Image (cartoon, rainbow, N blue to C red; front, side, top):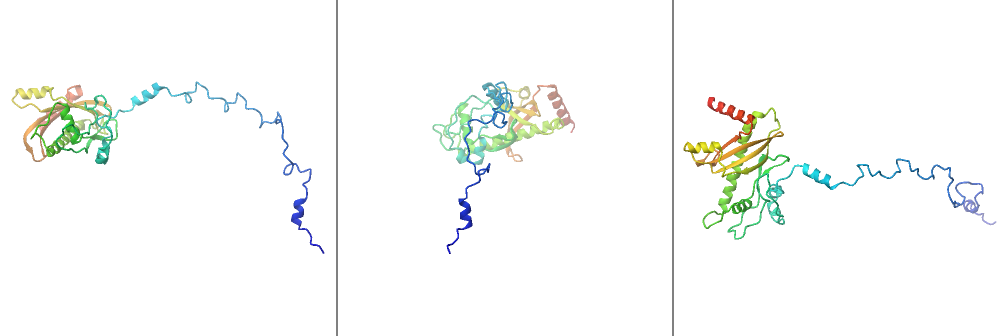
Length: 296
C-alpha cells in the first residue's frame, strides 16, 4: 500500500480561495487613491502644522550680528591680566608652555597689559611662572583675583623703565618681592573689609574688587598734609574700586615704609586704607571711624 502524502505538504499545495480579500490577493497597482480618502489627500495649505515657517517669526529668523555683539558686551568682561590665570595655579609647568598671547590694549581693570610669562632678552636667571590665588573676590566672577608670577613682575618692572644691573637683584630677591607684594594686598583687603563692615546690613553678601590702579606720583591730600608735618611720603599709592552690592566705592591706599620689620605681620610696610571722599556717605564713614578711634 503506497504511503499517503503528509497532510501539511498537501495543504501547502492547495490554492487559496479566490474570495480571500486580504492575505492572499495580489497587490494591484493603483494609479491614484480615491479623492475622498482623507489619509491620501494633499496637505491643506492653510494647515498651521504644514505651513512654511513665517519669515516674521522671531524664533526662525537668522541671528543678527548686532544681537551677538550686544549679548557679548553685556556679559562681565574678564580682565586680561586674569585671563587663564588659574592654569598657572593648577599646573604651572603645563601652562607655562602655552603659545604666546596676542598683544591687546591695556586692560582698564588693573592698568596692565596681557600677562607676559616669557623670559626677557638677556635675563640673568630663570624665574617662576606659577601664580598664587588671592582671597580677594573678583567682581562679576565666582573666582578670586590671582597675583602675578615672578616672571610677570620682572617684565612689568622692565616696562616701567627699570633695568637690571649686576648686584641689584637675584632669584631669591624676586621671590621675596612677590611674597611682600601679595601680603600687602591681602592686608589692604582686610582693611577694606573693616570699612565695609559699616554697611553689612545693606550689603550682606560682602564686597568684591572691581578694578585697581597704581598712582604713585599722585599724592593724596592726606599724604601731602603728613609730609608738611614732617612725616615721610608714601612710596606707593593704589586706588581700588570696590563693588558694594551694586554700588561702586573708591578706596585710597597709601603705602609707607615702616623702617624696621614688623615681626607680628612679617612686613615692613604700613598701610593707610580709607574710602575716598567722593560722596557724603564716605565722609560720614570717615567721621564715624575717627570719632571711635578718639574715644576708644
